[in-house]
Length: 423
Image (cartoon, rainbow, N blue to C red; front, side, top):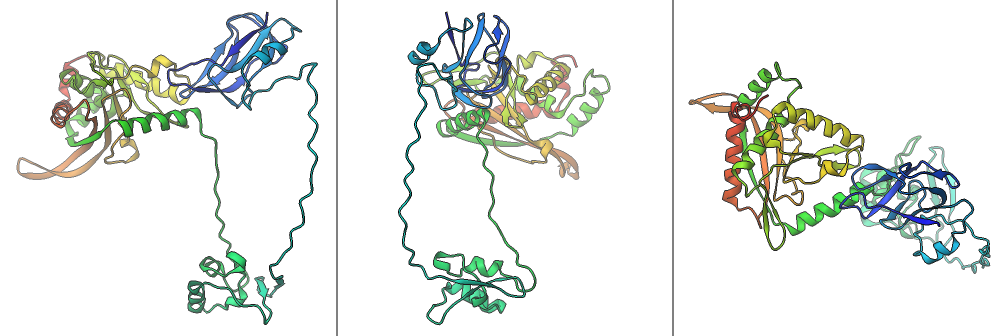
């Protein structure tokens, strides 16, 4: 008996999916566990396998088209089986669904075309001539009144341009400011066009817009910024990279420092759940990764118990799979705190929107060499600014400030990061 295959819910935030590719076509046999289609969710493109044997009798969503979760994705059954009754009983398919014609289906008759009634034209007719300088000219009769805005007349006078030589683009052929600016005497005219391109919003961008809007307008944000002297961290990183199995980045040091600081400040490692607050004892650090369609936040789990080299290798792997759209739901779920680093783009300081369900997110700027005062003398220093965005329903100002003091202590004394775990 034929069965409907519904659009699956492949992530907790997915409301609709886009069929990126069909691996089968109508009439092909399909076995349980065999790859049926690639489906683009709000975060990744995932392979969808069939859960039953049969023949693909119907494709409900064309490649590149979107459909809501639980809508008809396909129908599997026996070869030649009549599925017209099954389609009739199902809900009305969305516009992107392709339904094969049944024997009872009748071709639609085209609606008769009614010619529109002629409309009388009342506007005066203007004749066009081309002068030797290739400029289009409007010829006005003595009964015509030149239409030009006061500003256009003033600009024309300043530029020494005869308004009669210009074709107006305003209402009723009125010469306006833009016409004067675009007009140029001589052998050519510069034409300035307004152009734009529109693209359909991707599933990922829809989810980003929804989640961040909910966060920004539901969680009362406040921001705390501190400058951190990264000179010792830079020296430590150089030494550690001589023995580390993978190349360590400054972001790896920040992740480790945040994880250790969260253990000392559990209020920062928390979530607002409406009628209660959850204080997490584990530290799962979300690391924002820029991808083509937007932003993904894969999670480094139990970051406080991992070495710097383990964190570095994991972040590199997650970043690579994020850009290739190969992350699985387990890779981006469960974060308790998030880090967004734009320092590699030359950004000195910024604020980030909290990534639900976290109570805080840390925005990390770049390291810049600036003059600093040490022991009463002005010397070169390497400062990095970080800004903590806090949900005021959970975190108070003093709590956030204490967390940043601890974070600053770890990064300005990087030996503490190694002391809490191997390289």
